[in-house]
Length: 304
Image 1 (cartoon, helix red, strand yellow):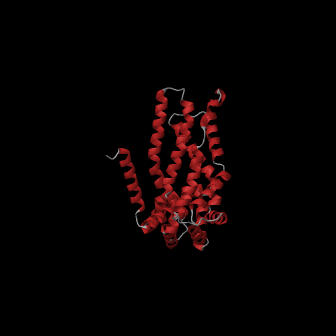
Image 2 (spheres, helix red, strand yellow):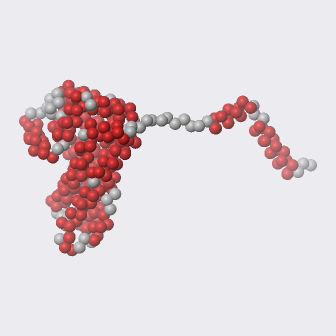
Image 3 (cartoon, rainbow, N blue to C red):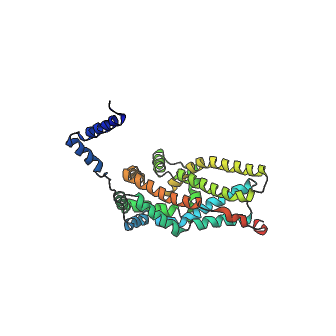
């Protein structure tokens, strides 16, 4: 009678034979598939010189130093809103909040990080095509218009332009082109995201200020900040339409149409998305990394 041990030994030999009794062609094919390296599609990235040229021609190099002031303007608006809603922030804390934003958004630090993100986010083909377009007469005109409109001294002209719009509305065709620019550039969405980031950072700082105050005061503050978030998006959407109209007011309808066609082309969509993500992502990361513990050290005189 065959023992259990002999039966198990026989079974193992059968399985061993079954594995190696397969045709050599099948075994070689399996080995080839297993050893074959995984194919990786290489996408060439632009070099630093090309990205630097893109930043210069697009006006980004000139706009980066203005970013800290843009965000500090949002900070001041939030703080003034709190003041109007009877949630005043002490002078010392207000100064600390502004300084923390200024320190986090130092232009040279922003520029270095934005450049790095563009190098890793853009393909060489997209960068080269965009640089070529920006070197055209229309590309130069677009960049000049954007830099001119975003300069601080243009605020009075913008206010005058908005008054003129109330008297004379733009024709439907031009308004449609402007809406297409906004759809691609997503300016209102970026502005809303920036606002929400600023509000969240200030709320973190105010946790220290209101930690010792009554619960009802803290709840009212939280409710106010929540209501601000909800109302800002629609305001930014309308404001962006006015701003785009103002920025490109000296372009003819045909020139604006050509610009829209570039933005809607694959290259235009790609470069716009990557540049927006680089600039917005860099600034928001810097703000989110602001550490508020030092607010605890404010003395009574600083809180006055």
